[in-house]
Amino acid sequence: MSKKLLPILGVLIGSIFTSVAFNIFLIPHQLLSGGVSGLAMLTGYFTPLNISMLYFVYNIPLLVAGWFLLGKRYIFLSIVSVAATTWLMTIIPIKAAATDLLISSVFGGVLIGIGVGISFRAGGSTGGFDILGSIITRYRDFPVGNVIVGLNGLVILAMGYLSNNWNIALASMVCIYIGGKVVDLIHVNHIKVTLFIVSNHTDLLIEKLMPLQRGVTMIKSEGAFSNTPKDMLMTVTTRYELTELRRIIKETDPNAFVNMVETIGIMGSFRKS
Image 1: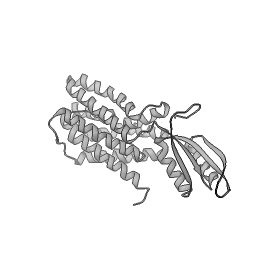
Image 2: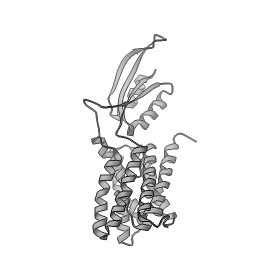
Image 3: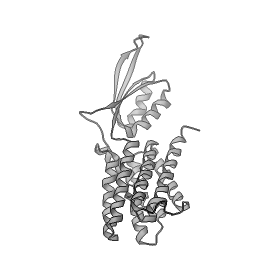
Image 4: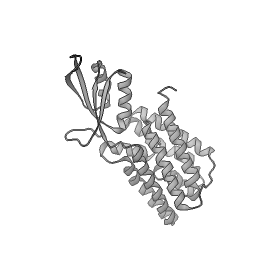
């Protein structure tokens, strides 16, 4: 299978987990997943409108905003995810796998967290507040799962107020909390990573790395065995951007030696946007 198709496969697998969580664990009990999907569910529970189509429509403005703020590749994969989830929600029957409200919220949260986490690891998202959370984490060093939990809390409050059933609202909060924690276990994009790159094509690498708007430092070095002078590149990035950075290095110089080190902290200028 082409490596270019692997990210698409990843977001499709993530969409399967998310759709199953929606139709098997959440919607049968009128639970919310929060965010844009939660807004779609909230609207669908109190109107005759279709939840899957609402999910698609509500995602459109965020996908447009993400296209300009987060990069076309990331949003393309997110569009694939949203479209796949919308389609899967129409073909997966809405039937409760468990009768207990709390069990459904727990397993629904786990599946949603897995789906979102896989999509993030593939370089995309499941749309909705995942995109908004990614935008926020570029400006603040917060775990993306915690950001999504905070945003989704507003939707849960609306559900409790409109339905006057705080049991469902509280169970939905459990679902969202667990989902956020699972996301952080799978994809931790607030962690910084320092890359040391030794390549024979440093000029071409710099040309391709600079559009990422991350600082690149060129360090004069020499091979201890060959005594050959080389230029070593050093750059600090986030786990969120690491997939794209590795792709660029591999395409530019497959023989490059890259040492990736987890960074404990940073002092000075580091672009979060």
